[in-house]
Length: 274
Image (cartoon, rainbow, N blue to C red; front, side):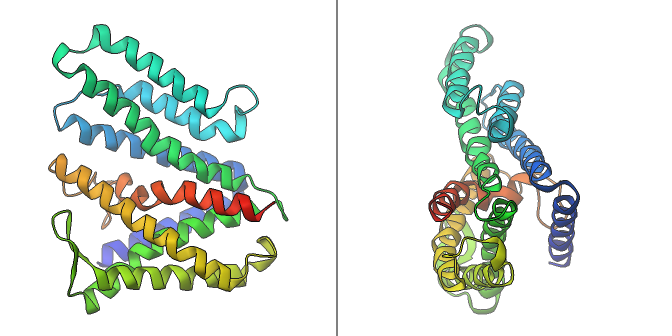
């Protein structure tokens, strides 16, 4: 637990310092790096199931998708990049994989690109929102990350203190409904607090009460996102996706809750910033 707490504080310190000195562009590069490392761990898990995905091209394309909102949107759209992935993976399975696992290779290679960098690239899109302030998008992205990650922290603490009823024993035996409820409460509290203290950087309508209300479904989908990674780890017979971060595990263990939360957050913030 101590390692997890120290790693959490260290990661937040790194993020805040990076944003302080490099701003929105630095934030998107950070998201891209994290996304690539997550995708690498995803493909490593897939490889443990006996499938050999096209990991190198997948990571290159994933980087292009995440950086797209910053550099490439005026030249090539995200759907076109995904179409390119389908074309390249389809051509490559004809000569680079054995007949018995060609479909699995195509499916997992493409799913990795969609599930990790495509979903996370919505954080990059949030970061670039500029209404009403040039830093609005940056604060919105931080809000989304904090709400998603503190839901996990709250669920852990409330689950340890009050957990009795198992939430999904076959997928993640330690998660409880009491912990889930505590996680949603924590998300709402953190969301409202950030919206209050940084209110000058958020759209006028994003009051602390609305922030708390929006935080709960985002926290809930973040919990689902965490369970999806647990399913993948069980399929690959792995406890953690890696050993990159002491007390937490791999990069996938860090980003798991953000993957499904990112597009939902983008829809909400894009609507509020109009």
